[in-house]
Length: 456
Ligand code: TRP
Image 1: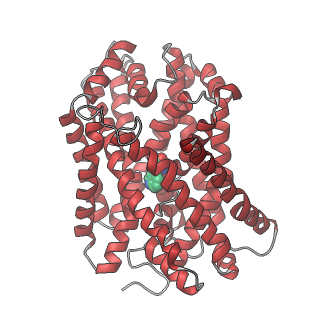
Image 2: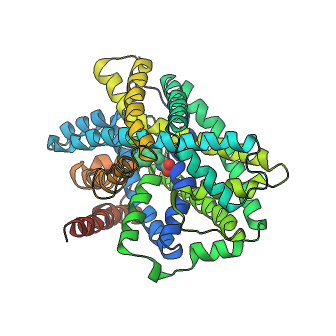
Image 3: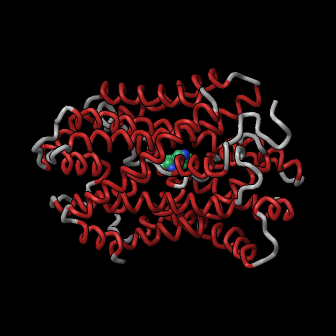
């Protein structure tokens, strides 16, 4: 039996494991694969600035809200919100936060596993020397040929899901913590090595210029929406993943301190990955706005023909896969913890059932790249695009908005002060300003724009 004040699912061994676990959730395909290519598509500099503003002004208050709700409840997001609703005599409408999060988690994991599978395949290709002496055209053609093969995509997606389910079924300490203890330090070391490579590749000054020169003309209002969606996605916000992890955080850890560390680590990885990828892009005269294939073309191209490049290449893609795994496990935790609580079910069984549902949903994304490439859910969105768009641009911001409103307006003020450790100083005023005004209005403004655009 868990002690009072502890979660029945287990507790992180100390606050640093929470920081690593949440950073493990945050750092993933969003940082290494997605951030560089959407920054490229949206013109670089100005986009990066808007993204950073979203991370710090909107992301941090929402992440603090998630952690405080989770830690207070010590249960799955659905039940944590439920218990707080009862305590604050609020409407049960707010429990929607938990349910929508569970749904968003399924949608995201379904396509996330497909992309993670690409990284697995590329680890293999690097190892067998496919990219020795490759040029840009060959690297592009290899990627296209891979996407055209549904069986290959399916095989790798299946493999990734099996590993994810196996880890989560082992529980918070034996499964999640063990994976995080190994994968996260390795990830940081390799990223630094690659950054060293990027700096010496010849394209580094141009990469810095591309990411930090504020070229406002290249940024559209759509770009602002994408930047906000990316901030939510990269910090794992808006669906309860961080809330679920917060439920296992010891009481004496500081919420503002841990949350700021997580956001800084995540930002560092995204910026470093961007600099690595764009250094290679400019050193090889590639196109920075080439879309989702960016990482899968640049990295093999750059590493394939180096001495010992195969080894670096294998390690790079293995680490992308690790980063994806530490994110994927967090996507399952809200639903998993809920089902275990509600039905007193065995964690292992629940994990397998959830995995099967995500795997089936993911087949839609697999086919979006080949057999169903012309099947559109709405407009020109394939199943993959649709899941990606709806989760990232609608469900996560909406979830985040509800979470911050719930924490800032509905919860008893005393409870929030005790959880965050405020004493009425400047920090508390800053929190109130960000959580009550800046974050909600920021999300709302972007939303209204989206709606206006879809109907205008
Ligand atoms: N943050 C991860 C990434 O950048 C993805 C992720 C994990 C996620 N858990 C999440 C996104 C929860 C949204 C919500 O790759």
